[in-house]
Length: 310
Image 1 (cartoon, helix red, strand yellow):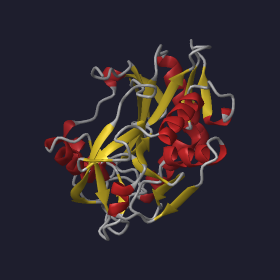
Image 2 (cartoon, helix red, strand yellow):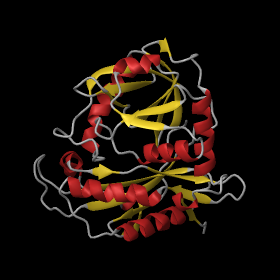
Image 3 (cartoon, one colour):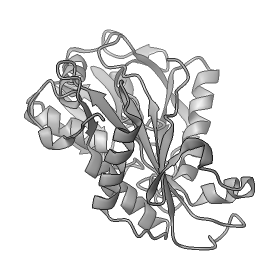
Image 4 (cartoon, helix red, strand yellow):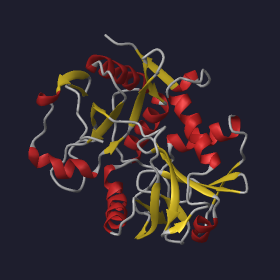
């Protein structure tokens, strides 16, 4: 994929602003990022109507507000405020393609300690981001030597920028060693997730995925996949602790997340998963997820917020 383009208009603290004027003092960059939280939200075009719809908008914004609260910041903006602002932002940029929207909240600070104010600044911007659904993208993954952070260290359920240094360590190690992605374990040696995405295994016709107490982000996409698996694919889903060796004995495996969407894992630590090709259930899930996010499937319309073009 080519380098992402940021669209010309951003939303910052209650109003639309040109991208070039949305600036902070360079001395704020490091300290401000310590307490920052963010969301990643995608909008997809319907192939028949060409309508653009933001997927799972309110679910993402509820988690965004929860993250702001859990880092002890405050905001004057309600869920409805942010919903309307994001729709306005996307409409103002008038994209003609799939896009990715990133709400970002931060506090001004002079040091890496407490913020000078508990009131969060919020900025949202839009970038282009190509979908990999309906492509041949696969992952050759590895179990990382880095351990997933825990709830008593830097709570994984908070989508905080600082947490993603843990993910970056794992990702860079995996890439240096010739893999596409990493899989992080908890301090107890149980499977957690990938850097920025959740993990699901298929065994004996069932989907098995680490529980929300296994050091994972409480993923909107994970919850979506679980619901679709049960209701559309008629496949049981088991949420529990997962041993490392279960990765190697699985019939299928895949990552899921807003950014990565649904990507089959075909090998882990150079051991093929199943046949070493994307499995049947994984492919069914990819197709189902594609049809839901793009509105090809009429069901789950409440998950799609249509943004009319200017």
